[in-house]
Image 1 (cartoon, rainbow, N blue to C red):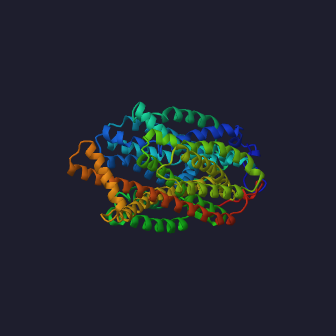
Image 2: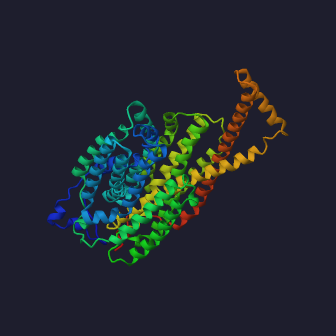
Image 3: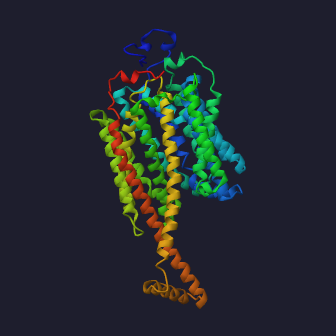
Length: 537
């Protein structure tokens, strides 16, 4: 494989000993190796969710305490993610990838053995820190392994793991927990991790520019500031609704640390001679616009992923496993669309695919806002199938266009920041939609409750019918009245929750529509270009 550096000069063509050690490997073998690691890591962000009640009961913890098994993983993952490019330059991409997969697999095994919640949280921190490097590393390896004209197909293959894994996670987690034990949610990573380790060792090699990269000093201040603001941001989003946001001293301190740490981090990284994160990549308008689009897409994608299971389970009475199965069409749509988009994108302007994906995503959000409490399985099936296809139209071109102006030397840093924007967008999205849904529901309960008065013939008729029902079941007059009032309030709450879901999905619809004009800012990637070879350094 030829590794290019600068315009027209091919470093790998020079018969040096180090370059001769880089064999020609079929890029699809490389894609399979990194795909296994990526899929395993992304799956673990959602697979534990449905197991939390079982974990809490088995480890003698409360439900709130058990959520730290999720929060600890996400915080550690978010802190490591943006420094992946620096770590790969310092230690070598293959060495870092091998260490990450080994660490992730070993910590998964330890999570399954955890005898207490404290030990589980500690091992989840190790798991999140190990897994933080996997997504940007695999993306950087793929973008380098394929020539520019084939990158769409590669990103289509890689995107399957990013989109399908969060949907498959609750289904797999529910099945393993119900059929075996919550510990198998972690043990399932072991065979996948071993296969990924063997394939990485056999098929992935560092490019020459990483081999001859000069070791620089360590930006300890930059790493520390990054850990402070990213960790505080993640904690604020994870615990905000539970702690009543700014009504809590804990959340206020998280906000102060986030804002102060972020400002200090920016000042440090722009002034440092060897920053741990190279922020100069944002000088390219295509990359900066793509990173912003990915943030908002992460907001909508992960936000809707949280809303739909709540809708299915709380309002329609689906068990956890059936709710996961009901969400499977999204993954099916992505599996259909992503390979097709990857194969056809080079024949047309990828920005057109991106615009179509965003508009289709907006359409599916609008379809969800038109559903009611009478919705059945097929009412959810078709919008989710279309949404899965829209994500294929969206993720593949967005990644390809965003990375087009970035040099191979800067690819590791750029993919790290790109994945960080998606994760931050997802974190903000989950926090915002759950908060808005809760606040809207409270408002609608008050509004609907205003009409349930003694002066409303319809309300009084409904109440009398409910009293008759409970009297017929053997309740006394006083108890039947209380049960009828509780039943009526339950109906009000259910209708209020439905209206709240509708409002949030309408908000997501408007958000996606507003993204379309931003596509015009991005430049069409030149498949043959030397533009991608422009160095950021």
